[in-house]
Length: 369
Image 1 (cartoon, rainbow, N blue to C red):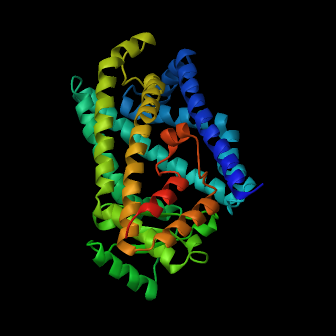
Image 2 (cartoon, one colour; image 1 turned 45 degrees about the vertical axis):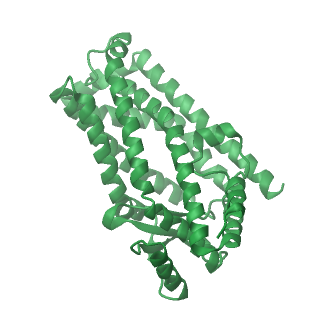
Image 3 (tube, rainbow, N blue to C red; image 1 turned 180 degrees about the horizontal axis):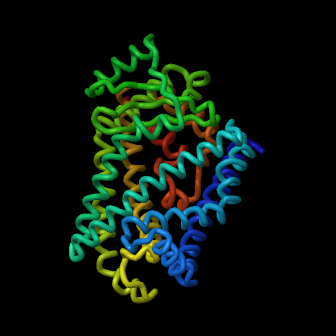
């Protein structure tokens, strides 16, 4: 099996699992709510907590619900995130490390989710006619804080930073930043190689925490020219304000969605004979709404992301004049990450935040420098 066929097979399996996981989650929440399990767990949690205060019982309910769901889907999670990656030679992670990462990610997700749930209950109680406005504002604030904290809190939970050392490459990147008219962001390597053979680069953070990260898996096989043009792509995101624009678009979509929830939730509660969204037994309904938010918003945000990625590609090639290096870097990345170079259009629309590699290379060949 050649690399391109291997990448196509990996892509079909990976995205097939994601689609199946989404469908199963929707079905699970619907069944849990309809079967009476939700009402039973809600009553049990109220009794166990000794209070009906949703800001206490809601997170407890969410913890039990999340544990049950994780146990049910554990075989699929294990296959998708561990066995499949090893099957295609993309993972170096040990089973012990995988379990540890799952525990850390699960704990972090629960803490953030419980905090968001309590904020929702507060807005619902304090502003029953305008809670969707406060939830929209809170959602925007949460994403801003999260974007600020990711480089300094979330990433270090899983990877170790190493500042790009002084030398010829760092000097070139400093000169490139001046050429592109941006304040030099600090640049780091992170130890991807501890867990995976894949390579990646990204612009993360906001304000004082903004930085460019390069996976250490690029160090041995990528030339300085390739690393320069990849970093120029990330600089272009910073110069273009793409992170801010994406967050603004996401905020607008989310606000529209929360308003739709506000309009429809009385009928939804009536359907399942629930007294209020503040009743912990309605948490599966809230999760269904959030799943729908993801299904509606993700293709829209992905389309915007692909546009910004194309803009950054063009800016990087023009700023560096390294068209050949960009093309060779894309070739290496697609092979190293087993990216499908020509995926079906429906998968691109649903899941791809970057244009397919074949289109990025074709576009680069047309750029005049």
